[in-house]
Image (cartoon, rainbow, N blue to C red; front, side):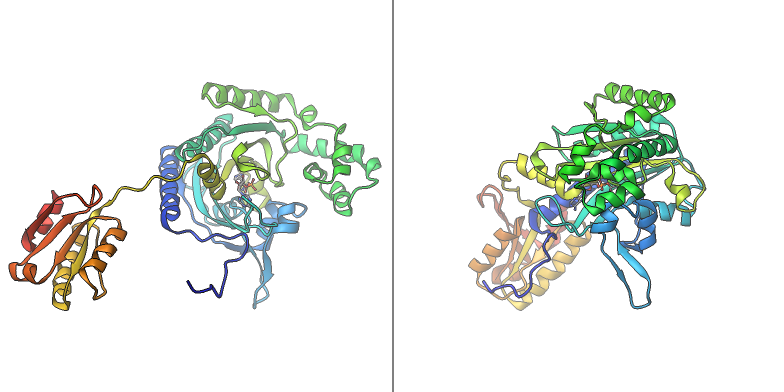
Length: 424
Ligand code: HAM
């Protein structure tokens, strides 16, 4: 084997073989679930103006300050590789007037996201999300449905045993009262804090709650909790959601410390973790963001959504699965032509089969029968159609069934009958 001259970047993956097939299957299964819940697909660009994320994810967040890939292109535009999906979908929702036809408008997406974190298992620089956003309903039913939708996608992906945590951040007013109280409580305790956390306390106190600095964590132990600032109205709403989750049979825990690392959330937030994942244990997360559309220049529009990390879903699957069982052979025909003339005839037959929707391939190379049969075996297709001298003379193929370790039947089939045989 030759030595590779180039290697992929750390924190990125190539996808091929069975992995690539399973990935496609997962996306297909997720699309089916979304459609059942009344969602439509949306695709937004990977490149967005940097400002889209500053306004939404928040200037004083890890994602924007430490992880976002940003650059100035030749024309001087400030551009970012999207670190998450929600901001672009909101930008598009406003710009394309997606709320005009119908409300609520339910949209789903799948695609690559980029964060320049230190790569480790389950933490990538290019990763993929499957996400959904619902615009135009403030009802608690919308929150409940969104959480059920996330659970349904996980189920379709064959993932069990996850932990579902929820919290209520209150409305914008509750949150800002809480931010004030947190700042007041902590401002006399910043001795030993890193400058970043001190700045955060000033500019965006809630972000201090995500800090990993042990000194900051210590100060937080006795700090006020968001739950004491949430209004009765908000609490009632949250109770209805929890009741709904119970009715839906979704096991959950209320985690009063969870605030999430993005600025746009209001009211309900949720996160799904799995013990198979190790340190980076969140497989999916989401919440309500009632102020964001307005903040990004649209009409005030309540919204709620979530995103699942595809690589993390696949990690859970991989760790839970025994070695993959050998896949069955796929229905289809592998053609072997023993001369150039036979290849020409085989190619014509193969074209007809493909048009009829039957998977077929031709061995392009001139090689021995034995070598060609090895190729046929590797193709994974169930049948091999051989065209040698005798077959050319009889205007037929020798059709071998390779299932059952090659013990399947062998027969002579006239060219004219081949399609008919497979259509049966
Ligand atoms: P998030 O919690 O930042 O939320 O990301 C959602 C999921 O993306 C995570 O739970 C994780 O599975 C995956 N993920 C995030 N970063 C990485 C990484 N570096 N490598 C691998 N996987 C990763 C959001 O992005 C919000 N937009 C979710 C949302 C939608 N909220 C409302 N609507």
